[in-house]
Length: 411
Image (tube, rainbow, N blue to C red):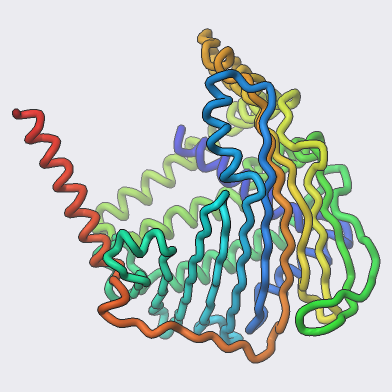
């Protein structure tokens, strides 16, 4: 049952996020359709910029010492990501590239990722190249890249990648059907997606007419949305069936022995059966937990605001906005302690701070369905290491540490 509670919590979070783009209103449906269409584009480029603002107040002496070290790292941190992707219309072959440049305090961090994947006759093959940050290269004997090759990873990862593609396609299809069905009845009884009209927007590939939509949530309606979506999810038989099918599908690609896979599937079926029997009580306890956080601030004064621009062809070409998140330590901890029946209030007496994180972001998508060239770096034995070799080295290192600790105990 504990596993099912964790599953329901995770699923509620996912459903809450996806529900931002669904609903019974015309505007919400239009935005959801734009998201779906953008995912099916055969090629595109994008640039995303993220900036962080971090502050804290009402700190105890202990917290102040810790926060003084953290604030310079997080406050005014910035991340810039440039990406490219192209795929065929059937999505059976795709290439992607991501270049990320980040700065935390005085520490720069540059990372690159290239992916080449294809599936044929239900067999997936892919190669992923990760360019390590300079600080990591120095610890890898100068190696610049880590290479993940599906043909060499089955043994190291415990995952059957040959089965993964069909499973992924099946789950994606089922999820799309579930979302489409849920859109018809989803109605949290307040509006958080509004039509902001049309205008021209200057994008990297030209000045385009776009239609604007805005998602707006404050602390109160954010919590209302979480409550509505959580209840909608756990009491939705189709959603439970999807989650069960997903969990079973994952056991089938995990290289388990036939008898172990059958046992895992039986356990999953029993867990969901038990969950359904206890659904009324579970729903009651879940709402008790959610209601208890009504007086704990989670979303700050600016709230959550996300602006989307959809071009005349129905693709999302811009996404920008901000999120204000709050962690009120004493109120949060006392609420958790109250729920658990804990009588130990020492933690709440120690932690008195209110932490605030502001996230500003701006993303543009361009060259949709146009020629997008992706260049892969030249990989050699001298400048790279295979993932399975890195995995083996890590295993040997861990084993060596265990042996060393055991020998120390004997001495």
